[in-house]
Amino acid sequence: MASITSQLVPLESNFLVPNGTFLVELAAFGLMLFILGKWVVPPINRAMTARQDAIRKQFADLDEAKQDAREAEEQFKAQIADARHEAARIREDAREQGAQIIAEMREQAQSEASRIVEHAHAQISAERQHAVTTLRAEVGALATALAGRIVGESLEDDERSGRVVDRFLADLETLETSQVAAKDGVS
Image (cartoon, rainbow, N blue to C red):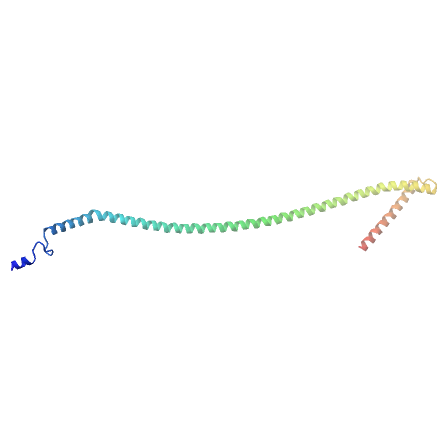
């Protein structure tokens, strides 16, 4: 029977039966797996783990930076809003101060104008009084001389000539006052 079996399948070519080459190859593969598992894969795993940790840290830093940027943007917007409110308040204060200065200047100009008008009235009154005094003296002298020519005798009496001049000027003032009153009544 051994001969039948040997004729059918030779032992050396049977792939199901392990031979020495297979065992050596299997031992070499195991040794390679052991070397790779002991010295090659752990550094690669450590490098991959470190790289994953670095990437996670970068993502965490990125998220933190985004949060910081949002907070900085909110602070910036708040500061801008505060600055706008402050600028509006300053503009409003400036407007109020400008209006107050304008009111003060108008009041000061009004009082200055009133003072100038009062001074002008006083000056006009003084000049009028001076003109009336000068006019009395001149009109008196002229009236006395004219009356003396008309009458034909000298009216050199100062007392008499003073009364004539005073009466003439009083009549002139009465006439002037009645004309002013008539003019005011018409208007």
